[in-house]
Length: 168
Length: 121
Image (cartoon, rainbow over all chains, first blue to last red):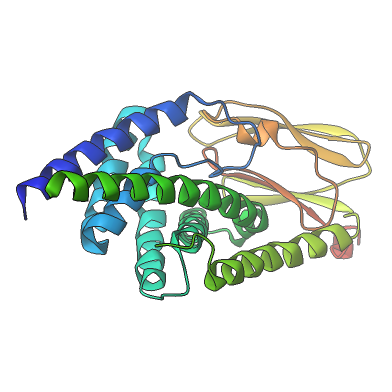
């Protein structure tokens, strides 16, 4: 692991941290559990595209654990961890295809995240009725996934340009 | 990473929209329910939807408290002591299959149709 990679990961972790805090200050507008923008996932997308999926996997779970203990409860951590696993798996698979850009990867990741959360909610509560939330969460995942993907695309482009310029 | 929108993105987008649309259509076409199933503490109780009433629920450990109200054919959660209050913010439900879930207190309110005729007998 290069020193620059380590620095980058630490920096992105702190950025994800701040974004999580920012998001926790935004009041919930629509009353569906699990519905949120996921601003901190911009940092996750950065790690995924710059350092690969294995690091993104550990990065995401570290971030969820840290922010979970600070801003949310223990139950939120379980939900986020299970959602995160499915999210990274889906994104890793789709990233390999050339005909899918960061927008599609981000969207599918968001849907995977919400699906993982619903599945774990069904398992914990032993109740299949929670699937009732799926269409709403699927739609919200598409919207937030597009948003996060669009932001990540432009930031990544800027960042890559900056890094190569400094390197020369 | 030159073009921002590619074929696969549109495919995923359409697929996700179609998936949720199908669920929504099923949801809209659902007939009005006739009864309400409220489960808490692992036991289920069925109430008629056409009779106005208030139901107070208390968990075994005396912590989770929910008040469910049935009025004018709609069910809603009036108050709860869960931290997120998602169940209280949920809009009143009346259609078959709709439900209000309070995850922290493990309370499930679901509208069903009148299949449970054997209750009357």
